[in-house]
Image 1 (cartoon, rainbow, N blue to C red):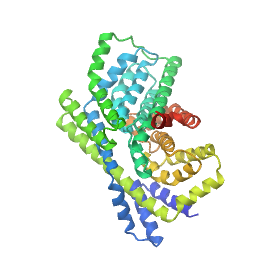
Image 2: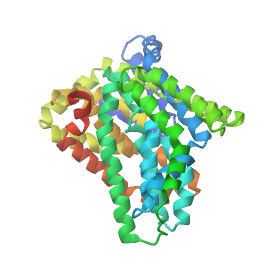
Image 3: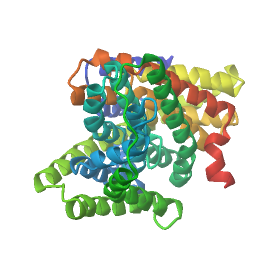
Image 4: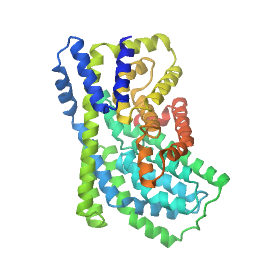
Length: 424
């Protein structure tokens, strides 16, 4: 009964438009006081949470992605990919998905991925006759690859709160990320084949491909640098983010000379605002988590699940439904911070690997990024394309289905996530 009252109070605060961070932190503080615990536990929990080296990767990856966005790197990257696959069925859509996947491997941010590639791809696709809702859905869903294909900010947060290896999580995200890219590409080609109505591109010449690839080489090199530094063990994720930030400045400011001082200031301010929002949510969730732990709610939920759900598949079905409902009112990081401490003990009790569960959680969080009313990628595409939110939301429905298919593949074949980090 206690958990029902707490969740009802939390949802009431959110419906009253209280910011997520303050709803979580404020409710957590109230629970501490009424539970007879010291309110000083709240600042202690916040300080212990924010004093984490791994969290430094969050603002650094945000800075890197925003500098690449303001420096116009997405245009060269999209042009290079389009030169190679533009003549395929639905070639422009395929190039969009692959560009999202590549930029995701650089930035670690779904919003930055959707904004960077969307700014370039949406006008091109609409001018070539692609169905508008398909275009909007494609870009909103393609942007979600930014948190599945490593590096990934939600994976960093998951690793931080569960004390699991962030590098192992990054490695585990490669297989499902590539699988989702393949599913998106196949759907785009099938959609183009049966819907038609678009202008087909002629194959680019080898000279055009070489020229476009050369222009995109700096951004590709940045992806290899950041990912290579992490996977070889030469740098921690935080150090790799710092290297990526410095390299992004070099590429956009010196090599391409597309980053002006005003754009640099915009990138810094936007990164600062996003970082503050993320860290406030992390702090609020930590206070809330401390309170519900003292009330033994995670243990009670874990006990309830293990007593009433005796198979992993039923657990995944129930948790998926819960996360889908939560995705209607919570944004991605809030879901990770609230649900993972509660659900992970039960998942491990049923024999699910914590790294696998982290990747599963991130895929479900991707769904939250494109479900109204708080799906951030929907608002990004709405802003870029200047269209109604309903058009974007309708366009993402087929891609949500593909994400659910990825969850099914992940359950039936756990090595899709676990083979690279543990068996290579």
